[in-house]
Image 1: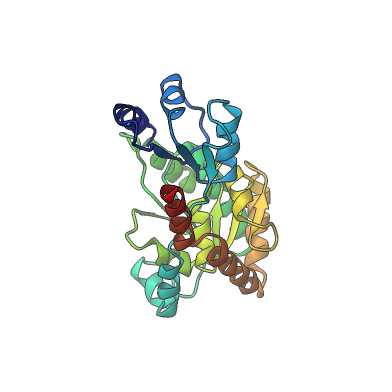
Image 2: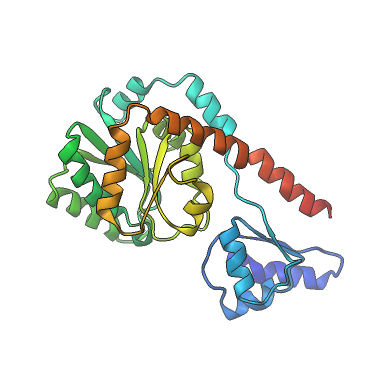
Length: 278
């Protein structure tokens, strides 16, 4: 966490033999205090190449200090989940028709996630596939819950009340990812796109906006589909195309293979251990 930089830098300064290794997860600009304290780091791990570029652009760290180690996901968890997964039973457990087409997203209910674009795209998708249901898992971190209220109002306005479901917090989100026919990420910014990689590990086809993180994780038209940020018709068009493609499992299989090869948790841990061992 950025708020830990100052304390960590002070602790390292008090003991010159201590090595200060920080991990940067976001693309936001560093403030003056964080720029000063992070400059003291022995290494700064960027969770994506995009985060690495952002750090270099601020000209406070040398190339030697910055190392890119992409985030990892527990691909073994999805292997275990898929092995004994009963989609019909899961859908019944969350109150959904067991034979429906299912499109969903997971993420905090924040405006920068642009879940409203997902809702508007859903209204277009049902024109072609009226049997589709849509789910959104995540909580609203605002004190008043205003973002969730706005999304619920939009769902009613677009006539999706019986088709769009808010699931709140899920303890076993991997089950939802395994049940989806399409995962949608409509975000306007992602430093990596961890949940995108998780959806890929579940073998689910992903439609994502062209954030810096998504472009690193997805190979367009091979392991997922990338669309312009904020382009609701293109999001809907991509989702509709996937739902109408009986070979969509082939793209899902390629996505799962890519996630296992590039984003395993073991790979991430091994690379971080090498940094510590230096």
